[in-house]
Length: 165
Image (cartoon, rainbow, N blue to C red):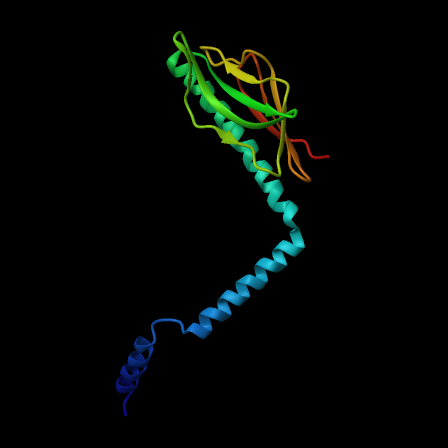
């Protein structure tokens, strides 16, 4: 048997086995489950909740930026309408103020269950040139970490900072 015949035999054997067996697939699944369990026990469920709070802070910042851009492009004031319940914000909606009445621009966004959001203002509004009508500040808190999203009134700039001690 020469070298070329041996190579052909090896190629045929490798090409006949193209998929994983059920046992190999089960072993991979079990390893992934163990790694996930170890990660959750190491970092805790609070880490996932803190990630939800950080994600909501980003979502709120993006919604404010969208309101500001909408105000500049249309010349009509846009604002976020916050819906409070028991002192905490439970949801918000992006709204445009028109001469015919207020029109909802975006769909209502809800606050995740393990996140606490507080704000002194119920409406966070931008003027036709993109400036904030007031100095707005929204506090977002997860189990271990917290953020403040604020609007600078003169420029309309949106700042998001982590305030965890």
